[in-house]
Image 1 (cartoon, one colour):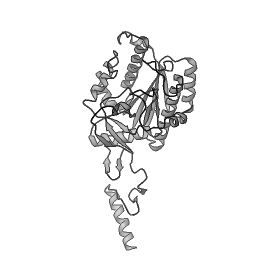
Image 2 (spheres, one colour; image 1 turned 180 degrees about the vertical axis):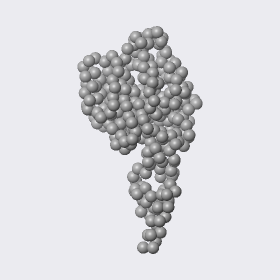
Image 3 (cartoon, helix red, strand yellow; image 1 turned 90 degrees about the horizontal axis):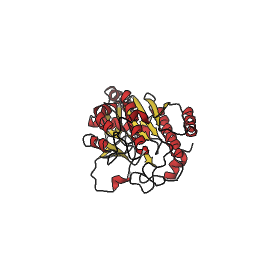
Length: 330
């Protein structure tokens, strides 16, 4: 009883000074009142990963704006190939949006104090497809605003392209960046409509952003997909510990990534110039940012890019594609 008394006093003193205690015999943390298999981290306060200890969060996230750009008419931009499962494009858009809503809803239950908004930029979909999208929006409990793209707004800004599809693609990308520029959320998640997201995607992106940016003491770029092209050369990388998985540094992304409003403003010229013409690679000016700043992607993937099965920019390794496809049927 005497030993138990001193143990309780020690726990109270440890809590008072902000320390956490690990009881490896019982596999619990008495200061957190949790089993060590539980989520030990506290969002916007501390990130705890065994056996690496605690990271104090100084890069706190209170709000996230997700901007989803969609085109339900073009099957695969700039290619004649079919996507995995070979459905009409609207089916990928609906399942992508559904998986995004599910992931954000799951994250909101874990982190109810973080505010989420979604803006959808639609590239002139048919009314029947818009109707299907609106039905899915109406069922959600997230603030979602659907905007129709007007390509004429950019005819004197973006260089004339060889095809209308390429011009439209650049217009929609610039529209997304302009919308983000006008908002003040802490993080911006730019995402395209041919990605399916695991339900833990948003939770892991938020918590890993907080942990890693707090350790590095600077903002980041996060790509949710583990692309196959990352394994096709002898690229050197650093491995970092996120919230519940490993992350690797990368020097290229496609147009689906998360970053801070601070970085959007800081590198606005790169974002803007990337949309003025088709470059080689398409993301040329975005990739230039990663020469100066940390960009990371997860191991294993939090989102899968539903392109052709042979695409080096497509399917992530070690994923049950049929499962995630079926789970997001609308």
